[in-house]
Image (cartoon, rainbow, N blue to C red; front, side):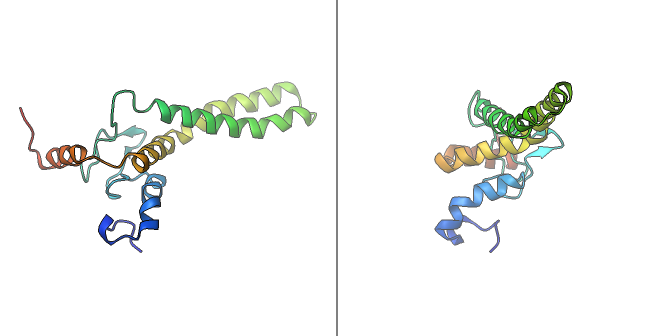
Length: 143
């Protein structure tokens, strides 16, 4: 089944996961066509449908928390057992610091995309957000 189909021709079970499938591919969770990032920089709106990625002020606070919890937990699970393995303490600390710096940087784009997918699953796009996206794409806006 095509992930990019409209909500009207997609079975209910697929509707529940489409936001997440699109987010994992770093595509707009709403339309599935526009890319969310240009390298490490996130677009303000979807280049294809105009949906605003930041839905309210301070929106990404939860994405940062999600990134911190998952990458910190993963680093702890990797480094924690090494502390009891007999490896030199400085080597374990160095590995821990490297993982603590690299993992959040490598995962931040997916954390933002997944947070947006979680939020859209709980609070679907509003008519206002869709209209603002249409006006953004068509170039029609109040001056």
